[in-house]
Image (cartoon, rainbow, N blue to C red; front, side, top):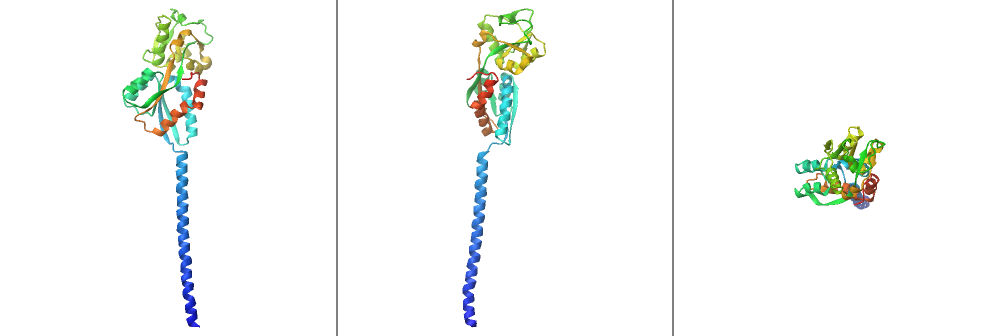
Length: 275
């Protein structure tokens, strides 16, 4: 009886050891699977929303309203990102970029000011035109001076403001004046289109030559007057990712949004023309 019990005890011990080993293997396998699943899940989550951090956009002053809207849409679509803007005269922004100011994207109001950046080798790739813009005269609400043409702005009794000639809106205004063979001496030259418009909004000037988009954005603070010479001075707006971009992927994604149907809808609703 004792011998038999010993004999039966050995296979039982072996079987028990086998079960233990199998359980250990199963636990390892389960742990590996779990960790693999977690890893796959993390990779998937990372791939689905890989954008994060801040994307810095330098953009022409006339893009302020529409780009601010697009910035909010971008942040909503990519949680964890933040879009910061620097709006101003395209020439000043271009000078800042070539001077080493950190930025990821540059959107200019003219190819000429974009060339400052590309010629300096600070752009990554070729700039793409994403919208165009046309000039319009901004007058006081109700147009009390009865301005109906570009020629009317040459009246000595009027205080007229223009953008500086180095700024795209100023260069375009001069081009329109040349097309109409007109000479105009403004009371001031402003460093960007918003500054020119503000002079009229504050009633410090009777009129300013700005973009249609700026008249649109001002609402009832000003009244817009179209003029035929503006057709000779339409500005193309190029956009490009910068060579020293700190957030390359987010910069690419923001440019893609600007060029998308959704982005174009926001821009055209603001008064911009299709490229």
